[in-house]
Amino acid sequence: MKRLVSLALLAMALPAAPALAQSTATGNVAIDGRVAPVCILGDPNPALVNLGQLSASSGPRTGKIATITPQTVQLPASFCNFAGSVVRVTATALTSSDTSVPQPGFSRAVNYTATATNWAAGASTATTNALRDGTSPTASGLGSTQPLPKIADIALTLSNFTAPGDLILVAGTYNGTVVVTLGPAAVAD
Amino acid sequence: MMKRLTLPLAALALTLPGVALAQATDTSTKTVGIVGTVPQMCFAGTLTGSGSFDLGILIDTTTGQLRNDLSAPAQMLVGSFCSSRSTITVSATPLVAQDFTAAAPNGFSRSVDYTATASGWTTTPASFTTSAASNPAAIQTRPTAFTGDIAVAISGFATTGGSSLRLVADEDYRGLVTVTIAAVN
Image (cartoon, rainbow over all chains, first blue to last red; front, side):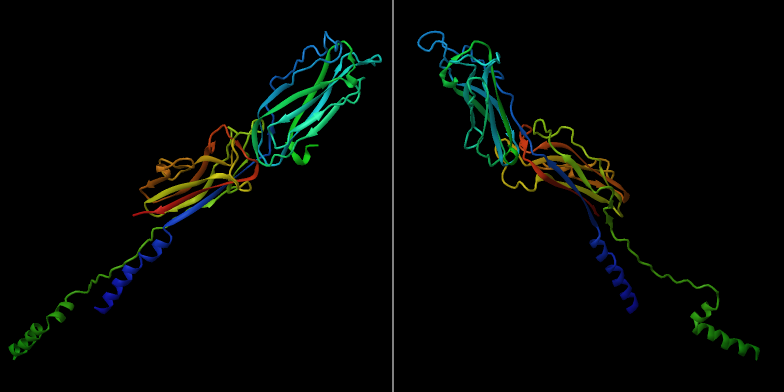
């Protein structure tokens, strides 16, 4: 009778302990990915700024540069997805398509200031300083660094149109460009 | 004299009936009980291949938004088994930027949701969507013991917060899929 009791206890103990220890199993699969640093400028609107006639056609400033209203170009939904970005503005003066050296008293260049705002605390500004013969037409400037990822409409304003020495402008078609660059502050140059 | 000898033999037989029966046959039967158990056991298998989902670059670099063609080969948990009726449960965590830990600025997100599925164990795969408030399909039951491979797959990627958001740059976005098989009574 004593032996029978011992067998019964053993039979009860066996199913309990090991079954609980291994009745659940887990597998983990990790997922990895990365997001590259990217900056994208919105398409400029308008893509071409037409200033119309640059010189005054009457009055005491006839032939000299007229008063030109500041022009604004929007670069909508421009963004950088990382911290530490900056806008650089590189402006090239308007110069006449006639590349010959102008006669004394005349200029074939029109200078201006290009300013990009709404990115960081400090705007990016460049003022051209071309000579009357159109040489040295390019200037550039950096704004302050944007410390966070940002998406915004960058506004580029062209203003302060002047002719070197306020000389009379030679007739012709004038062209200039503004290049806006958005990128990491460390390599913006 | 003969009669006197017979009587003592009969009396002996009457007083020892058990001995008399044992001597009547050459076969004896006894029953011994045998008790054993097989515990409920599960094994989640061995992860094959790379052992992880490497999605590479998550964004379309022309827009900064999540790629719409993200995919990765399924990962296999080979040789999984449960020795009894079981459940399979899948859970997952979103892909989250590990270095950019601050709140994402307006217009940006630092997280990607997706759906993880574990198939091969039950008729209906267990699935878990990281953006869902609840995931009733995350646990499925198999009525019988089973051994086989479990395929773990991820799909349906979406930027947390909305598809128009851009993802902040980060070299390390990480998520985790966990598959659990458990014996049940």
